[in-house]
Every structure is written in C-alpha cells, then in structure tokens.
Length: 610
Image (cartoon, rainbow, N blue to C red; front, top):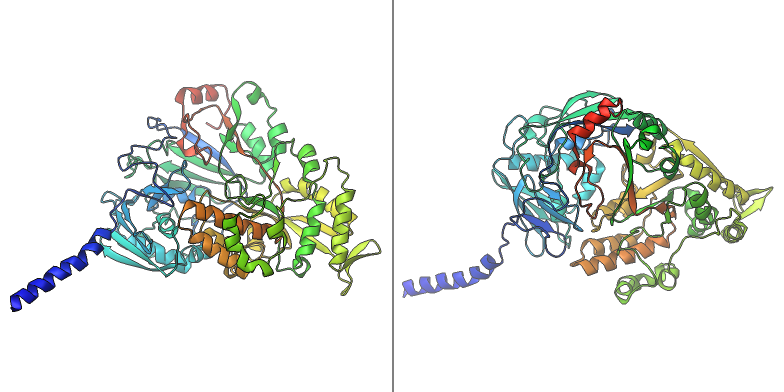
C-alpha cells in the first residue's frame, strides 16, 4: 500500500511537472522585439554586407572638438571617437529589421513568453585581447559597474532589472522587476561587456587615456589627447567569422583626427586629410565641395536613401526656466521661426519640416486619434489640451517670402493673452514687469545662421533672444546640468522605441544630471504613456502607444520643430568598395572596404589621406 501511494505521488508529480517543462523556453540564436527573426539559426551573414570584402587598408575619419578620455561609459570627460569599438556586446543588432539582435558574445539567449527574465550563455571561444576567456563573472561585473559608476543613463536604462544571477561559468540570468517590459531582454543584449580582471585594479569612474583592454574587432594603437586616436584591427580577433561580423570591420587601421569646427574639418577633408565625411550641413553640401578633387572624380558626393525614423530636432525649451513654463508662450514663439524662408534661402531646399517626435515612420501621429489611441488617451481627456483630440498638430507655416506679419500678429495676441504686453517696444510680463528674453546655447557656429533670422523675427515681437556659442566641453557640462534657456535639442528614434523614452521624457529623468530629458517635462500622463509603450505586447500596440505619446508631446509645445532629410549625404575619397544593398537604417560604413588599386591611384595623384 505504501508503495502504491509513493507511485501515485510520483505520477502526479510527473503530471504537474510536465507543463512547466514543456513551457521552458529553448535557447535561441537571436531575439526579435516583435514577430519573427529575419535570419534563421544557420544564417551565414547579413544581406547588406559583402561576405568576401577584403581586409586591409588604413583610413582616417574627422571628428569635431576634442577628447580627454578613452572611457565612453562615464559622465566625466569627453570620450574619443571609436572608443566603443574596443568592446563586444552580448548580442548584435541587424540594420535591416525593426529591432532584432543575434548572438555575438552570447551563443544563445533564452527568455520566457512573458519576458520576465533573460538568460545568456557565452561562447566558449570568446576571448579578451590578452587571451583570457570571457566569463559570466565579467558580464555581472559589467552590469554592476555600469549601474553603480557608469553614466546616469545606465541606471535608468537598466532600471527594471532586479538582479543578475550567475548560473554557471558561462551563463548569466537577468531577472526583472514586476511589470511588462518586452524590450528589456534586447536591452540587456546591448550590454557592453568589460573585463573584470582589468578594471578591478583601476578607477572605473575616472577619465583615462590608458588604452583599455577589450574583446572587440579593434584595439587602441595610439592616442594623443584632443588631436587623434588610432585603432588597429585585431588580426586574431576571436569573433571575426561569426555571422554578425562577416563583412564588417574590414579596415586594418582607423584614425580619428580632431578639428576645431565643421568648416575647418571640411577644408581638411577636401585637402586630403581624411577619407569619409557625413555632411550634416545643407549649405556645405551645396557650396563647400566645389573643389578640383570633386571635378576630377577623386571625391564622390552621394546621397543614400534610408527608411529610419528621423526623430525630432528643434529649438528645445527648458521648462525649468520660469519664462517657458506657460505652454501658450512656447506655442506663440514658434510663430517666429520661418522654416519655409530658411529652407529656400539657407538650406537650398533640401529639407522637409519636422512635425512628429517619431518623424519619417509609421509611429508618427497623423490626423485625429484612432479608436485604439483614444482608448489610451480618454482617461486623461480632462487633463490634456483639447487639441490632442480635435486637431492634427502641425507647426506654423509661411509662404517663404520672409514676410511673416500674419504669424507675428497671431504670436503677439497669444503673448498678450498669456500676460506678456509691449512697453516701450519691449515684451514684458504685465504682473511682474520682467522682460521676455532668453539665451540660445549652441555648440557650433554652424547653427548661428539659423538662429539669427529667428532672433530677428522675435525682436519684432519685443522678445530678445541671444545666441551664445561655447566650446564642446563647456556645452556638454551646461547641457548635462540643464544650465540653459534654449538649445538645439534632438532625440533620435529607432523603429522600435522603448525604455529610452524614460530618459527622454519621464519625470524621474527631468532632474537627473546627464539625462536626455533636456526640456525638463514632468507629466504623470507622459510617464504612464511611456510605460504603456514599453509594455506593448505586439507591433500594433507599440505603434498605437507611440502615436498617443507623440500627440501629447506635440501639444505640450516642448520644441519649435526644425527639419529633416530622408537620406544621408556622404562625401568620400574614391578608394572604397561598398555593398550593393543599403539597409533600412542607412549606410553602414564598417561594411565598406578599401580597394587597393583605387587607394594607390589616389595616393599617386597626391590626394587622399593615405
């Protein structure tokens, strides 16, 4: 009888165990945010690379400003260009999917259906540049170090992680706090892994120019603070034949040379000091490359279309300043920016006006809210501007003639209604007598030509706006501490927004030094919409949440929107080969390669950086 009872108990136990075992997630070669992975477990390389690209050659790239550190993970100092090339991450993103990652340091990844945890198992062959193996201890050390001593961004980005647990010499599980956060496993996949044995004897949160130990495709060869950093390809790089790396990292040497400003950099480029330049200035693209090397075909000027979101760039108000606390004041000042005139006279007609924080994507709010959006927005109706529900947001328009009297009349009335009146030609607060004036902080003189016409229009309203350009280190310090009235703010967006939105807009980030909440918005509604976005169970729910958040941000008048282009402008010396396919995210320069014959011809002609 006792035997039968034991047998029955054992059988019941098997029945109870069976579902749990059946539901146990299987190790995967990659992870998609929503839907299926494009590339299967046996894929050889991404579609947008040349798997037979030759290795070799030396290239130079230009950078602006200066640097005093090789540690890109802390808030102190300015990190050198390419400093992150030294490190590998657990997973690697593809550039032709909305948000998918595949194994790099990690051979496999596991996560349950509810994504309440994620588990990474490292590759046995993964090595540091000193040939020591990469272990679970390194992963846990990296996570802890970034959260405790890294830039504030990391504490925010990994804020929903409860703990990191070592399950074996090569396996780490990250367990998450309660709440829906489907993106978190992929966020952990982006974790840069640092060598525990190296950093245990060094101060992680101090700036340093000592070449660090890494595991990536490149190592630091030499460095001269504020002038140049040279990276060399690791010839015996442990991961060079992984599918995520095939066709990448083709240059033997990459040097970043630093220049005082963009104008000096352009002159250096056309003079052959460096090889490749992404041009952000429409004026420079139209006028600065009329040089012999272009006419001879030695320098190529090309545009590459892309389908990535443009995000938002604009004159960003600092809501921490009393002068900008009233949204009606912010809305009124937007009428003084004449984009149409600027596009015609300053930008050579190359831009489109930006209107959404998720511009150039299906995530942007257009028209009136859908039924699905209304489900998210309806509970807040009484607390939101009525326009969220009744109007499509669009920034003020002009006819491009430069005559914006109609817009200025609208702005003047709005300012009067908000309590700002004209006295002796100056706009002052009727109650306090305080003048309506502010400073626009810039990091480059390049943008002064955009600010000055804007300031001239504001002057017609009795508003005084001063442009102030400061050097890079001072600009970073002032923006990190929110010591400004207005800046040219920008928020890049991916095809799959998520946890980074907390850093952009949340109340918690508003007072956290170094956060990306440059406007200082504090809104319980925005906070809750961000969490709904992060918890979106599928792609359609994500789109709906993004559009709802977009509407609320638009009608808060946080910025005076600028402009964008749906292509990359790239100038390069004709020494490169490039893949036939340009992926969704645009040109991937590290998939290009040096064509030896072309490089030799340019060198023989006495041109080019090498």
